[in-house]
Image (cartoon, helix red, strand yellow):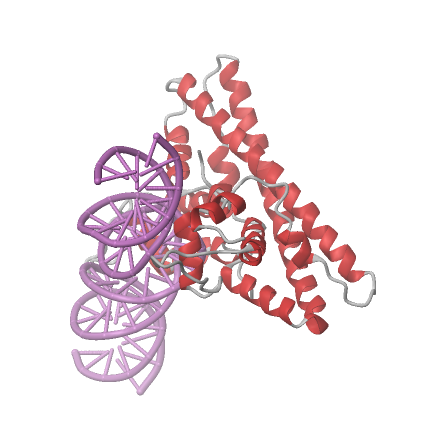
Length: 145
Length: 145
DNA sequence: TCTTGAACCTCTAGTCACTATAGGGACTAC
DNA sequence: GTAGTCCCTATAGTGACTAGAGGTTCAAGA
């Protein structure tokens, strides 16, 4: 059974304009249209879009998602390329997890100090102003290189 | 001692155009200028910019950083808001780490199978296409509301 | 069958947080 | 005094959406 873009949006929790945007940039295939030129989707579109949404939630850029989709599309072709791509993504994930773990510890320390019922001697500002120990930059946190 | 924008950039590891951008949006105060209209900074600018950089690295949006700076300006009421912000970030970081761990396992399985010379039957898509358990959306992850 | 109103269409422009480029002027070391 | 590096403004581009205008299609009820 096929359904409208609004129904696809409800099923995947991806907004309608975002779906059209994904089609425009070639991340989702252009679906067939009704007589009156309205898009008609099926379950395969929903599966692909769910994948995209989930990957975006994990912080993957669109380019990286394109690679992941391509990797999945030709499962029996050139294991070498697939393997290398997967390894690269694993390394990227490890970097992210490491970074998030560091950030988490720092925020937890902040909360612990704030929450001990002390008179407000919150040191977040001081903590954050301390420039000593993190050489990454925000724009790089979620990039795929 | 005062110094140039390039020197400030080196000291804080924030790029020169980004510093000018922060000034433009009112996050950094406009510094005094030299005879030839070049910006001259001092240690207080460096401290504030270090704070901003670190907060950005922790995932705070510019609007949230503005709030943090304002809170810092009146320290009596600051702790509650900061604590709450930090807690929100920790919860989000935990969600991300959990997701990344799942994806990592799936990619690792792919690599393992490819390495054994088997035909790749990557299940990355199936794993991620499972739409069951996360209702947040990427754009909202770090918002301050 | 007709009508109404929600959902759909395209196209353009706006958002955030930068980043890059063009076309110059200032400063420093020799 | 000149070479070379740094700095200036202004504008436009990036990624990944998001919002709006202005018009069309579809499904449900009278």
